[in-house]
Length: 128
Image (cartoon, rainbow, N blue to C red; front, side):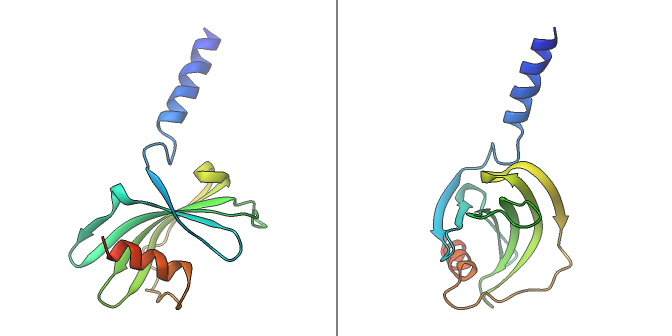
């Protein structure tokens, strides 16, 4: 019975893990070797904004122990700015082992610097 419960728990956690339903596509790499992915299937446009998911996989773990993050963003393609709505921090690569979830809807808009990863990501989702 205990092994059946273990199998059920394992299957449930794989099926409903944070990135199990996402179709992550590698789109760019930073000068530091960090890799960035977009889920093109979940890009949505509504009321002049584009909403999109980004998975960031870090080459070097942060001091807090973060190895990857998954961010949900709102992009404004006309003014070329973005706002992070939600961020999840993970202990493992590719969004595995959740450390924390942060609701950031009240944050201000940011304007991606030229030639940055954020500029590339916003250009990519705005062109879809």
